[in-house]
Length: 441
Image (cartoon, rainbow, N blue to C red; front, side, top):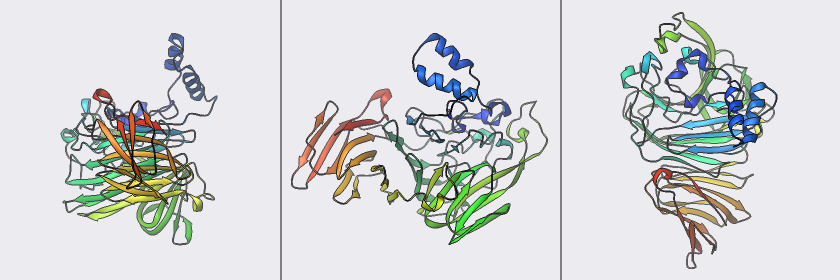
């Protein structure tokens, strides 16, 4: 939940098409829990105060629910999540009782972002269901039948690495609906997160779009393209050489000036179109919506994208936003990002390889996997790993420099000839496969 008060929009299935489900939660449940147990008492007390409007959020966490391919990330000023699917689960709930009739793509790497909790309140009737935040989707003339919504995932390599506070998400995406594939990854830090996509391929003669966000229009939209900053009048347009965009305190930064599509205007629809319940209003309604996406063109081959999301920022801060982010690689083999302020490097290895993290420091893996390292000076002090495919018993990480420590779940081996330490880390098995492991050095 967002701050323990609002539903995470990414967790919703057919209930996203119910008007009454888009509300802040009351205190009944946490109060009852406190009467029965003091387990996690401080968190429950904070949630009650937040729900009463008596306190602001304080908790920071990064948590991956490895059984359901869902990652949630919170800081006191924002909340975001990534929803995915794999061969281990289905993409979406069946549209029982005539609800959720256009939910085909809401599990395809969905990345909602919220500061206040009401950015998506009752937006569903006017939504563009092929431009879900975070997703890369083939833009079809219309969605398939509602009977075609639920599909079993087609890819094993889906997961995340986290130490409980920071994390990176990996998604070797294969669409269950369309001839479309992509390698997508997200890298989460305190004040920003990085979104990378590569090897975007489609055989269909239709455009493919990656959507950064689609939410209620809450403020002016400021755009910096070239050296010109301007507030956009309402409408829909393609913009070239865009460096950043700011809407409702959330910045979207492009490390390389980018051509993007922006819509900040009214969208129309009805509840009955997405929910055929007898009490669903049939009247057409209109809401102002902010929509931002990258058009990869028809039949893209090896297309890519990269952008940084900066929540809780201002116009004055935008020119400096993202300056501590170094995108080390965005290739079909490795997607990797380093935060130079935190000295954290996160990497997704789709195959064996290595990445240069700093002068004199390389990190490598001899198999696919995800890794996060914390660096002090030129030395690695903490390593977190996970196996998105859930097939390995151990994962092997190589680090420049000599490490001779061993622990109950890892062993290090010094290769003097290559001046590299090879670290074998035991991975969780059974129902815990996919969970992260963190070791201290």
